[in-house]
Length: 202
Image (cartoon, rainbow, N blue to C red):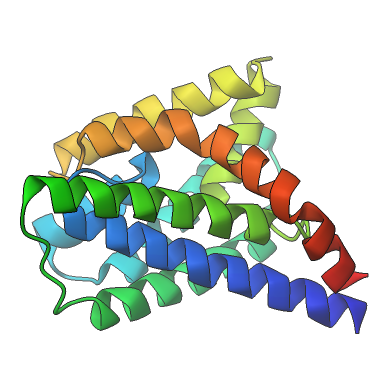
């Protein structure tokens, strides 16, 4: 039962996080660096949905991580990316009719989306189940090049922004906000929700 509750918490976090990510994309203010790549690929090539690009790019990230570590691909992390990809496509379908007009409305809704993503991430990460492939790759970079986690994250975000720009992804001030504020946001919400999340899975 305890393991079942962990998976419920894990899936709930991904569900909330995916909603926030798609809501942010509707504002045209910018999305998280990794998301910008996948939204850009979907827009540029149009041969797959954003969710399917997430799954494909996650596989590439895991192959790179496995090559650096000289280990087998982390299949469990790939399963996580499949779940995220499916939820992203679900929310894109649900929110497709949503049109946000006006600069003030766009920025207000973006802030709400940023908060929603940080809440979702704090819930999804709490059970310590298999991480999203890009997070795993970040840890691999940290260990391989003896970096601090903050520097590894900045390196990954920088690479993602460059790739996203190449594929005309939705990079903007919101992308910088995600890169700078997501870590503190996760810490904040885990400190607020931690005792309830722990109680739920205990």
